[in-house]
Length: 64
Image (cartoon, rainbow, N blue to C red):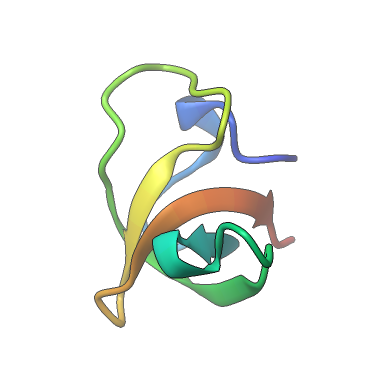
């Protein structure tokens, strides 16, 4: 799953996000979802979330 559908993401899930500062390099940051920030059901660049560490970014990959 690529993280573009809000329905696929729940608080407590482990995901890989790209931080705003890392968008050019594409470096992924792994963590646990604390809050879902995007309100729309889908987003072409990925759903924006806040991790438990406080970092904010767009979901690129959902870990299973």
